[in-house]
Length: 105
Image 1 (cartoon, one colour):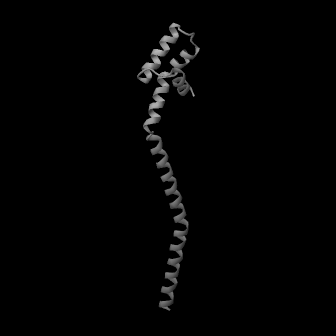
Image 2 (tube, rainbow, N blue to C red; image 1 turned 90 degrees about the vertical axis):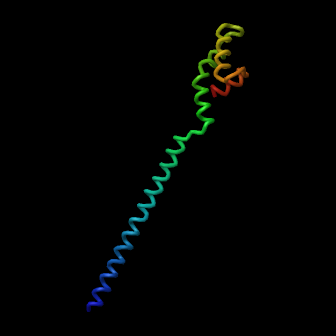
Image 3 (tube, rainbow, N blue to C red; image 1 turned 120 degrees about the vertical axis):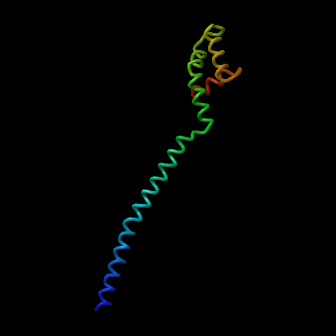
């Protein structure tokens, strides 16, 4: 009888362990997966590549100048100032049409 009782307790323990694993494992895996996804998203947001940073800075600096250049009259003071500002933003003379097309897209 003592052996039968011990066997019964071992089976109950095994069943409990299996139940805990069956319930806990999917929960643990889903939490782990969600944590990994959030971590990857945070890393990608924090680690903008250098090109994205440069383009954002350039757009912030040159947008007004490109709009001014587009709406100005040929050989006007506004056009000359806009061209100078665009040159300064890009660090040298550029094709204003192409530069502003890129900045304002």
